[in-house]
Amino acid sequence: MNIAVIGAGAVGLFLAVSFKRPGQDVVLVTKRAEQAALLAVRGISLTGKIKAEKKVLTQVGMGTKPFDLIVCAVKSYDVPSTVAMGESLAHDKTRWLFVQNGMGHLEEIAHLTGKVAVGVLEYGLFKEGDAVVEVRGLGSLKIAPFKRMTEQDITVIGDVADGQVLDIHTFPDYKPILEEKLIANACINPLTAITGEKNGALVKQQGYMAAMKSVFDEAVAVLGRNDEEALWHYVVAVCKKTANNESSMLVDYQQARKLELDAILGYLIRLGEKKQIHTPRLLLLYQLLSRGETR
Image (cartoon, rainbow, N blue to C red):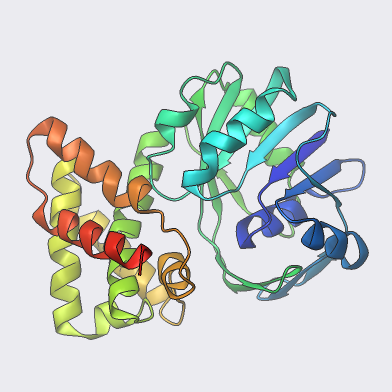
């Protein structure tokens, strides 16, 4: 199987290693020629709770070779350009897998004519330079069909992964798994970005905990979920499990990079407007962090 992994951040590097198995060609598509050249020589190293070293083909841009599986591991705001780049190299049986935070990207991939799955990656990953990823927390990749994806197609994606690196769980419906992760992202990422705290601080300090619960209540109301107790336990458990981790939004904020605000907070705010549900706390967080992006 010919596999392309688009995006060479922590998630992309990790997934490239995960799908690299004997007899499978994996091409990692990067933005920078310098990183591609380094990876071609050194390969990718996983350290921490998973240790592995593998070499994959690397290139800048998609090239001309068609792929059987295209894994999109870029930030949510880069999904439109990635789809435009990858569509020319997809064929009728190409399977797409999108692994992003939030749910704003769903609008961008709805027009794809191929077989599309979406996923949620629950590993704690930290990129060290251009070729090393530290695995700080173990988890799984949850995947579900989004469009024209059969149960067999989903099974194929699971079968081609290296089970020693990646634990894949499949689900029949994408909405519950994406909404669960969206709620956790909305509760944790913006507050850690604003406070500069690691995830665990949100459940250790009463004021942070109260702020997180108020954000949680708005997100649950917008999504119309009726399993609030279970979802709140999930959010708290994520904070505890990743207590020593810095959220991806905090890292991006500290490094003055673009934030995934529209995919997480923006999606909930827009959905709330459609349903005529007020989201003042979500809107405040969005406005505060939007100003920070231009500092």
